[in-house]
Length: 133
Image (tube, rainbow, N blue to C red; front, side, top):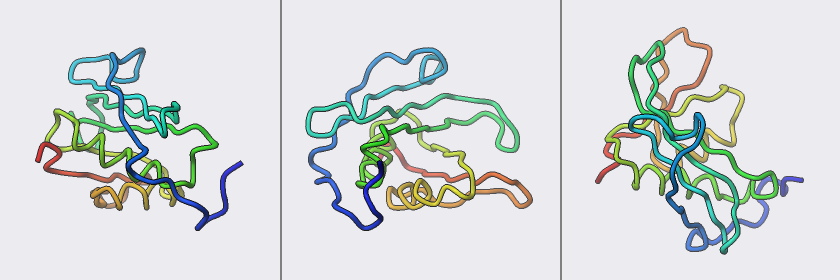
């Protein structure tokens, strides 16, 4: 069960990314990256980058995060998005999500991602530049 909105948040210092080899469709291709998300030494989820070639952007680095349900709503996503963007080899990263996914949108924006959705697209696309610096 998710903690209530505005509930206790984690200490960002407790979040760590452990880089590992990617696996099937999760950071395993050319330009791919993969990390386990750890909170206080326990696996809390995963974050990975796949280089994809899809409309409307063409070829780009797409970051995805999946957190264990018991870690959602604690601020882990905000920290993990930022840490992955800073650790990534890619200068620009994109996120693709449903427009209704407000929690992920807010977490990504807190990590420096901004709306880059082309007009008329049904999905929300966020972008962060300058990941390497």
